[in-house]
Image (cartoon, rainbow, N blue to C red; front, side, top):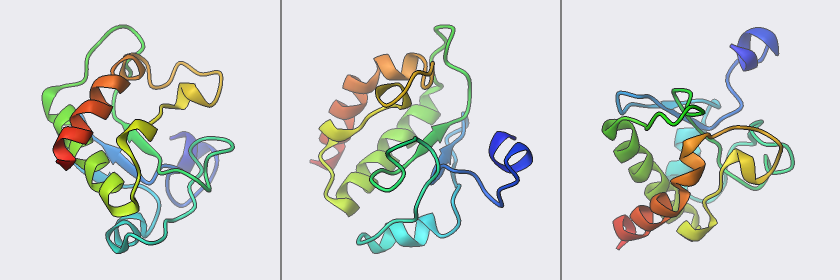
Length: 126
């Protein structure tokens, strides 16, 4: 709503969105085809100061009250991050959350799970 309805953009500022049911949706137009190419990426509008240097992945749900992401969502997030890291040569240790770059609650408890995410992404990459 914020990106499209309030800002009037034609799409979201995030490159990808991961649903609670485990579905990946392309956010920024052409993010998927560009990711598959592995050599360039679409300019995002997800994190001030990082839009030209990082891939933005949003997760459906509010995780500010201790709620945990559903298993399907977590598994797809790991797979998407592993694929993205592999395509762009990004070390899993370089996976960050919104909170690392600004004063925000986002990504809630997912920020506490970043060490686990990094570890699972690295293991998935072999």
